[in-house]
Length: 82
Image (cartoon, rainbow, N blue to C red):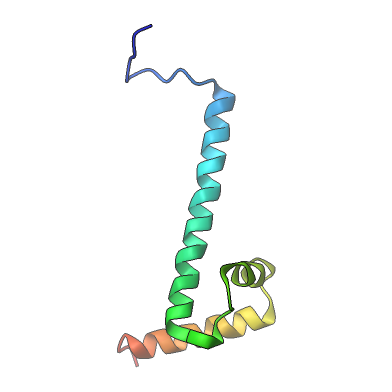
């Protein structure tokens, strides 16, 4: 069997499953990056670990909203925006 880089031999179901997996990985990576930014700005005021951050974010808790507001305020101040 010859390899043809122009042809995708996967079934539509396999393509859909791959896209779903990649989408989940993109979201997870974005959350990791966001947590790192929050931790960098807020320090000890940020959640202790990524799992706690994800739970707060996904549940959109009041504490998360307050932390997000504090992050934005401090990040703006750090970047010289006010």
